[in-house]
Image 1 (spheres, helix red, strand yellow):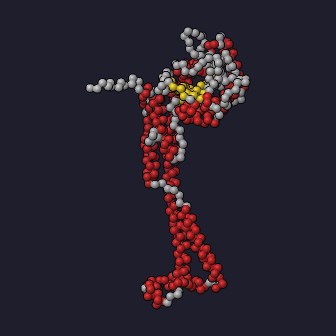
Image 2 (cartoon, helix red, strand yellow):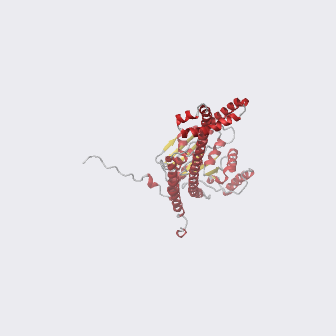
Image 3 (cartoon, rainbow, N blue to C red):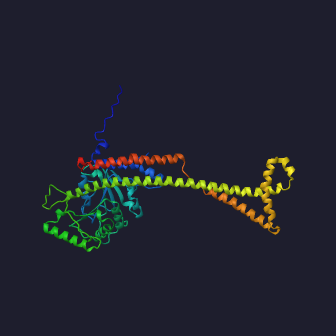
Length: 449
């Protein structure tokens, strides 16, 4: 007996934390893309098609003026003090807050490796220096399926940002699934910079925007709260890009048992909005999986069809090259041979090659000699030059057609493409249908299946 102890099993292995159907479906869809042997990304890359694997979590971007409660809301949702909070401008850059195996902080380059969908941000000079990620082990609420993006606190006046903050936030918003806009009733609720960015986002992704009156418990009386909300709504409605449709502005604040408030707190509706977006993300991921499968299959079919056309074209080019080459060599050879044979007497030629072959040579070359005698003597030199040019042209065409061959697939490559197509049809699409059924069984009645 050795003194080594048997390794103790982990109490909560990673797989056991994936309990919800939505989380499992998103994870399995992601695996279908990134599998090292039969992943869709690898197949598409071999065909010259670029596919991005779906995100396993939704992106919720939170923006607003400084001290609007963005970081406080994230800390409340995660139930962990991750982001600094305070009256000052605590967040000067972009911070991703996501769940993971252990508590860790990432810098800009590592963050972009973790979120390749946001690589277009490299176009904005200086953003990567103010980009980071905070990884937490929290599993509270739906945090395992959410990545929050905490944005810089926005202010008016002479505040100078180290990058183009307006366009950077707009770019983040285009990649996000939800955009929460927090209006602080005690601070700069009508910050022009915030309203300008919201107007830009409304033009490109207005369906993602959600407006909230944060820190509503600090306003005081209900009349004061309504007056602040009216001021914000009126300012928003003055913007041409924001008065297209009605919108809601729930009042939210961080619950504090030691500081009760009569103000209606609709912060639970924020959680419901996030959960609804997660469900929509599952549907979008499954639909995108179907589309990407069709794109890869269509590309494979086009590749095989193009290969068939290349094979046919190569066959035609080889025939044309052979024909032109034969004519370019045979015609001058026949022309020279006819004059050589004409120098022999019939008896001498019969003795050299035999009577049968001699007769054939006389008949074939006799035509050339007859045509040569038919040409006027003054034109014979011109005929030789023209005939030589024609033969040279035939040899040139033979060489030209020989170079026109297109690259074709080998039998092994065609077999591999056919196997990829069959795998997508039989395995990936079948898996997608089962995942869709699993998702729908959460809400639909059993007899609907």
